[in-house]
Length: 281
Image (tube, rainbow, N blue to C red):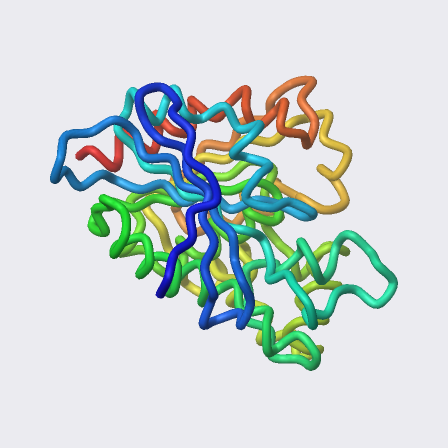
């Protein structure tokens, strides 16, 4: 797999890179960002996967996430993939809506036409990109964790629940915790996976927990001024599911914060320190 370097920038003693490659899973070119902190030659470093939300690319967290100083201090690689396939011939939402199609892959492998050919973000994030990272970057595959924002929070929590032995930590900002029960998720899961709702459950955090999936513990931040809190995010459903399943959950309702990267960047260091405590055990 040939990797093309788009840009390299020095930051906090490490290197922020952006890269492109031809993806076997999506059948398109894919762009992703990797921050590698300062380290000794030959060292293998823990890796934090960051999944972004609706309308985003790798660039949102890379430019606005304010993670590099903490990653440099804590010795963490941070990887930011794109949120969906892009390019000529990749179908989007027929009406041009922001919450489906381009920029809204929902971290699933689509089964429905015309999306099944390219929309394979689950396999891209959980299989293809980790293989590529292990080959070209100093990652320790035994020390991985995952976090995300909004749609990416949904992706991070579901991936962690389905791969509990792979990730030592999982956290989220403003996650869509029960997509089967909210408009964003109903539209996306129905469009990508079809109308048989039993197939949605493996991509729904609350449903996965109800069906027996478990993880060591979760950290979740939501802003109490988030405009999507009551209609789309429904954190109380995660709180109830974790309580019933005895999964330790730290759910922080942050006063006055909204859904933006001003919120994410404010608490990013908290999350990275929480991840580092588990990755460096």
